[in-house]
Image (tube, rainbow, N blue to C red):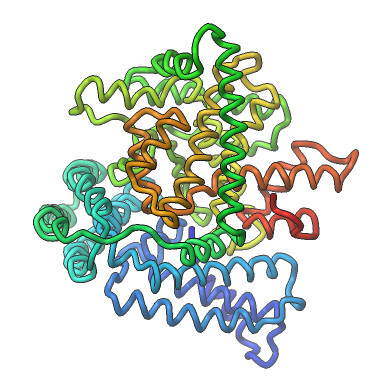
Length: 572
């Protein structure tokens, strides 16, 4: 549930000036949450930069074992203090925020002290450094010279972080080390080309000299780290990525506030999978009743742009989708420029097909939003490139754009600055923000988008099947012994995914065990919508529901139900 805020020191001074004895419960909550998030921001400096908080742009995270474990101890103290606050004396917004913070602390302690990715995930370090640099170059939130000075300060510490990684890593799963190795060339090239190109206009000779020295040192350290991964770590990477049932359920409860037996979740996923498969076959028959669903889909998937046209074709779709929201009163759309479609950064390629990268909710200046799409490696054989591009057939581009941009993640970003509290700009449940975007894919077609075009319904159903299989293989890989190879086959057979996508999805599932939150979130939002409609009766409108939902921020669905209905009730 982590997505971290600057403490407004003047506010904090005012709130604490009267002393603890005079602080009301609401003031105590504000004081404590501000102190907690400030502590978090100083530890997670790259994340702070991405939020638009620039007090620590020249600092890098401390990944020493002592710092990681000390964070858990400190968070435990904060948890005790948050739990001691009388919930009944807080405002409704604070009560929900308190629950989010408590769950977020539980999730962080579980990650640091039980799951321990800092001992098992080598890509966390190398791609983490790339991301840290990326946060400073992707938006012009400050003059280039200022951002370059911050980058130099971070780069000076990067070789030390990679050295610390070597000390931390114990017995990773082989697939984790393989993923890290597969991304090393992209990470190195990022520093050699993208980073240097971003500051080509800087003329200050001292800055340029210092930058060359720090950047060259990072590139050498990346080379050394890759050698370490290949020659030292890979041969001894015999760990198990599976969390086990107890840790899996604890993670799902902390991250999403979903506390249900795994057998029940599997039954829900299986039922949704079968419904969507039946609808998929029925829709394929509408397109061509003389062919099997798989053949119809295979024909459709070959209708895609070439790699060099993918970004421009997708960019051209956004205006049409945005106008539909306005014309059909789907949701109130704030005035804003269109998101810019770009290629996925190298450190996300191995596990991401498409994503939305928006400015942080605290960002005072830069407003560029990037809709990233993964292109095939031009060095691949032609048949592999073709197989990869089949995921980007034209109706799927529309469906993914609904998810990533309108009314999905980009619309969420446009509302973020107005969320009821800073807590909701920092923490959030994936079952909310990913569930919302996945819900939008189906809802838009139900409301008439791409009307009378069964190809688009087929694309939406294929993505729904992908999310259903994520739910099932996430649970089975981490609690029932399913292998990566079996997960690949499940994505191929049950969700009709091309082999490169199936492999990427299975890899992601080893690292993102609860990525079934897409399906769970969508189903919970539909249930909430039905209950909200019943509550409002004739006053209900679809736009009213969507506005109310998105304005609350990315609350876990039990808290969202409380906010909109006044009671949690049944999630599904």
